[in-house]
Image (cartoon, rainbow, N blue to C red; front, side, top):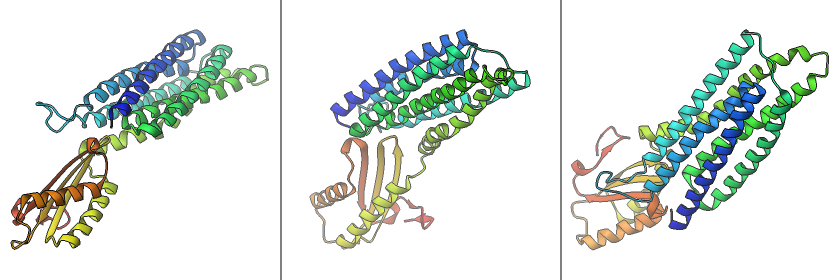
Length: 313
């Protein structure tokens, strides 16, 4: 990511943290005033989301530096770790919300002020959706991994606020009907519904981050590198090759070991460097998002273990 995109990424993350602070304060205060556990949950979710966003900003700063003496392969691994923390936190909120909702129903529900709650939900539903679409549009230009997954939290919060608006608005109207006695269960039911709605976004963050932390090879990147190398193998007459790929956030780690015949005509290192450059250009991706290593050997011992053959190759 170039410096201009990095500055845009940092600006969006700072703005996101500031906006989430507004939601956190508003949700906490309104939750207490209206006696709504659902709104209070939204406020608490937002406070912890601020901490995650601060971690994202720190990670954004770290990834500006490709490597250091202590982290010689760079700081890319920090991105999936931060996303794992956000996904885990979101999942914990889901579990708590579901438990609190069920417990509230079993305890006989509780009364609350639907007027205050409805005004809160209307204001923040509009604010959250506007900011969500603004960030999504802005990120199309910079293609930030952190901003993309940070915006998932805004989708979650916008969905929460919209659900609260519909539910509290309906409950407020219901108070003027013969079903008014049921309004004590509304808040607990909303907690359960919101918990179920938050499961897919939580998994959307958690599953990719776990795969990256565990080092699961991204299949699309693997296939792309294989297709490129198959063409070069035929073009230059390589005996064999083994490619290994991994991804950390936006960074792509690619290692390629190429087996040459012992009588291969090219003996000049500069010629091999030229082939490396060709392979690099064919694989694509910006240099600041790629860690590419290409080695040439005439001995299989120096090649990575072939995961397809299950033997040294």
